[in-house]
Length: 517
Ligand code: KIV
Ligand code: ZN
Image (cartoon, rainbow, N blue to C red; front, side, top):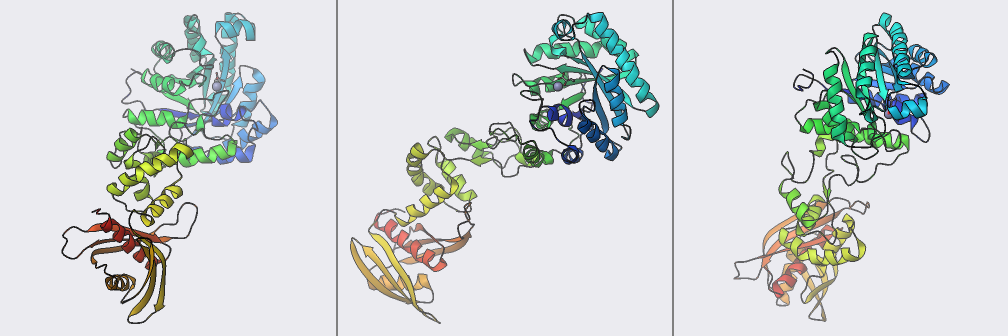
């Protein structure tokens, strides 16, 4: 039974070089097609429709060139209208491919037969059989095969028995692949899938049923995936969902959906994202930022609730708010937290820690209201703005102290530093001596009545920010007043490692003064 899926491997038949290409503002030449073809081979698709060789000399040449370099394990097919010249052209163009297929088609919907072909159904059925017979004459001696498509199959609900009858005739004439195109997506996936089921039941087991869904109403993936479960084995898909009008079914979406349903997908899915980027460049068709899986926003979280769930599950194989693990499609690190006026402390924490700034959740909580009010004006805050705001927040922490200047005036075994600062509005200067800036600063402050005990010290290098600003150091220390058991966590950030240390001490002085622990 074809409807049982466990032993049925999906056959990914890619139509980017034909349906996708014919809809490009500037269709690809041979060289460009070769680049995309190479990507398809790396993905591991089972079949490639290389073009419409009857359309132009350029496409004929491209089909022939790809056929000549095709590997043994991929079916190479060319599209032909049900006319003698087109079929001959395909036969010539794909002659060098190790596995050849002629794909011929004619419209079978009542509307198209009457208004476009302007032929009665009997003539259409006869032309279909003649086309398949001719294609099979070319293919049989070469061990190739014939695919027949009933164009506008999605509009054939009212004459389905005629269409099935035509299929049976073309199968008798040599076709072994019957393709059911939803040439224009107009209604419900469910109705289409029911028709697929009927065709599957009516055809002999040696025939492969294929679906080819256009995405006019945005349901092509749903229709293709459900058609697979209804018995269609060949899934006709396009890279980046390219294709006529709103495009064809996206290869990535179908593969990811099947993968999530436990179907073994015979593709290298880790190549999806790099391929999508390359194809977008080559087609000159940008990727919509909301495009499933490959869009810039496809793994971004902006609302506080989603950010919380995503954070709690980010290291699990199933995330609370992501369809798949981004690593699976070669998008490692794509899950990201964007800070907007709808975001919470979790986003602040995630953004800072992912940028290599190891803040605490308490610090993130304190910073969040400030960032939120900034975001109400500015929208999503870029990461460098968040980092800068955090740095400023550390320097301007509430309290009576403000560091003005810090300068090393002697170096050697003991070092000497001049530190100028404001305390309670009054400028002061101390000369500190010690075996480093922290020691010197603590010693100097003691002279003016500020005695501190250091209980923890750590300094890390922060990565360059995304705007390429020079790397900074972050000092994290814990200090307390003598006799206290509680210490305060304080930090300083600067491009100068010594200054970062001194900034951390002043951050701590302010925290101790306002009683923050
Ligand atoms: O959309 C369609 O009907 C087609 C056929 C030629 C298969 O592309
Ligand atoms: Zn199509």
